Length: 135
Image (cartoon, rainbow, N blue to C red; front, top):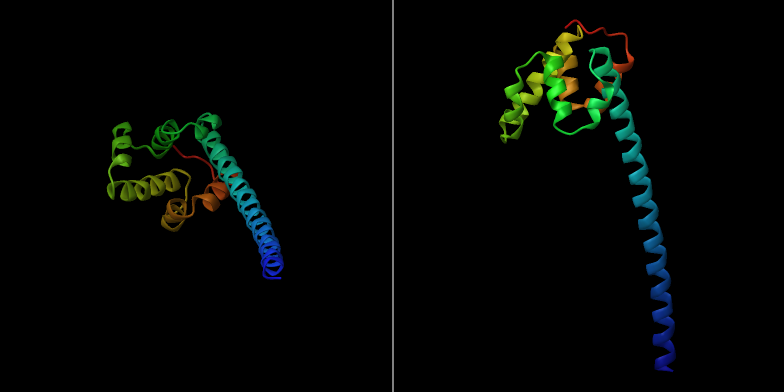
């Protein structure tokens, strides 16, 4: 009888594990789909922003090269790329570059800070909005 009871408990536990695993898999899939959608939107916004600035849109897809192109758009010297690899300094440089990009598109301080801290939203606004590059 004890063996039968432990077998039933084991089967019951397996059912709970399967349900929990299915829920975790569904949650992971949902997270991955949301992450993919946000990534596609950021790429689309950056692509359009690069094109507005007269640069190739595909440049936003290449790591490090996209920062070089962004520095060109911002009007900053190319050697600033080194500053992106220095901890804490890179945080300041990202803000300065975002402010410069916003200025080049005729936007103000608030928009530049938005580019620095919420690029997934503000690159979309910049790329698909009516802002014109004034480089």
